Amino acid sequence: MGQEHRYRKDETQPISSPVETSRIGADHGVPIAFRNVTKRFGAFTALDGFSMTIERGEFLTILGESGSGKSTILNALAGFVPIDSGEISIDGKAVHALPPEQRGVGMVFQNYSLFPHMNVADNVAFPLRMRGVQKREARRRSEEALDIVRLSGLGHRFPRELSGGQQQRVAVARAISFHPPVLLMDEPLGALDLKLREALQFEIKQIQRRLGCTVVYVTHDQREAMALSDRIVVLRSGRIEQLGSSADLYDKPRTKFVADFIGQTNVIPATRSGRQVILDHLGLIITPPSITGGDDPLFLNLRPEKLTARRAEGQEVEFPATVQETVFLGDTISVSAMTPSGIAIYFRQPRHAASGLSPGDAIWLSFDPSDAVLVVDVP
Image (cartoon, rainbow, N blue to C red; front, side, top):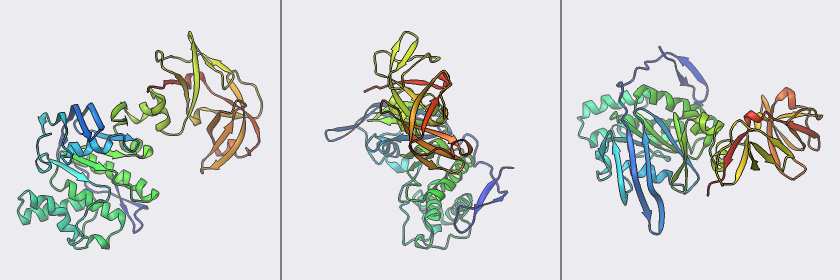
């Protein structure tokens, strides 16, 4: 039997207690496909021939900068925004010409969009009543949905009487009350503080596993995307820059944009000479395990945790730097340094290893060439 967590009044301190974790239905989720979808807003093209397939029961997150097209994709899938051309299908059936209520999708908005004049139970039952479900059955399903999000007993309250985290759970309960095979979530945690947001990430993932539905989640928070997703699609100007697991995007970014966008990193200009890579700004020549890219500008991607600081020279692959700032992060210390050529370098060290570093200290930074990931800068 699985374990879920019940939260105290501040909603961030878990109390372990066994609850029912069976899914509403095996293979409840369905596949989704976008085929050559184009959407324009006046002279601006938000999506241009966009194609993507989402697997049955997958938790897929759409990640990108503001204006990249992520909300357009979600709203087009929900039926709130008509597309200009192409096809959107859910479970193999074209839905792009159908109104939202006929697409069988649940939606959780960033601002929750709860009805202030309705109590919690009526808010959750609303989509059921709109689908013609009888009052008694709607009440039963409303109670079931509230139990899934662990708000049993609060059906009589009004949204104004709930905390932000509780309102978010009501919004999820409303979206899943009619057992949709597809659940869409548009930055549902964006209005919450960091501690509560991190706690509710686990809640959302547990709910999705219990329901078995396909989830399409939109966020601008890279850490949130990596914590929740089976796969992440990184958008750039309405096109897919890279699609893969959290580990793939973090460890094996294909472009400079993805390397920069997913987590903190160091992206250093490089040139190629046969099997060797020349790093003029670090005064190094290395031989990485693989070299990719054609004529596109080449960069070396080095994650902060892949660098090791020493007080004295002595390693084969290392370069000098001067400590600029140190930031205490609990178990680790984040350090910014500057190379003699003026390149800013960021690295992280365990607390015990970096506690003596101070601004102005001269250090040597080393790394394993096998940890060097080469990326290209694609326009």
